[in-house]
Image (tube, rainbow, N blue to C red; front, side, top):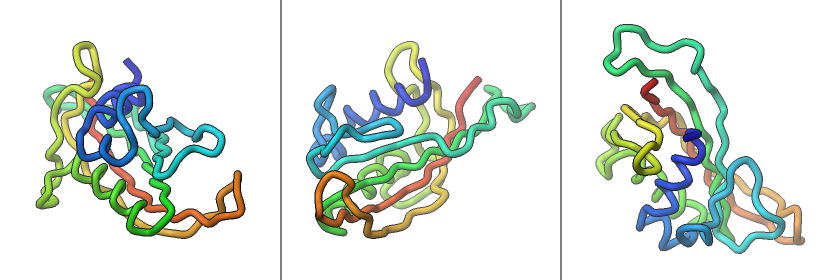
Length: 148
C-alpha cells in the first residue's frame, strides 16, 4: 500500500478529523489537489521530502523518513486551525510528546509507521481559485518514520 493511501485511510477514520471534514469516501481529504470548489473545511496533503533511498541502518525495523504537508483550509482562521489541530493530535499525543503514533495506517497490509515528528505549523490567508472569497489556511508538516 502506498503511504498516501495509508494516510487517507487512517485520517478519514479518525473521529476528531471526521467530525470536521467528513468520513470515508465523503471525507474532504485530498492527495495533492482538491476537487473543484470543495465544501469547507478541507485538507490537501502531499509529500514534501522522501528519503526512501537512504534508510537508517541499524534500526529495528529499518526505517526511512518522509515529510508530508497537510494544508487545512477554512472560512475562518479558527476553522482551518481546528482541522490542523486535529491532524496534529492524530499523529502526536495531546501533550505534544514526539514520536507518539506507532502502528499500521490503513489496516491489514497497510503502511507501518514507527515514529512521527512535528516539523512546523503555520497559518496564512490565500485566495480561493474558484470564488472571490479568501480562504484561511493552517499548514502542518509531519515527518514519519516508515518501516521498510
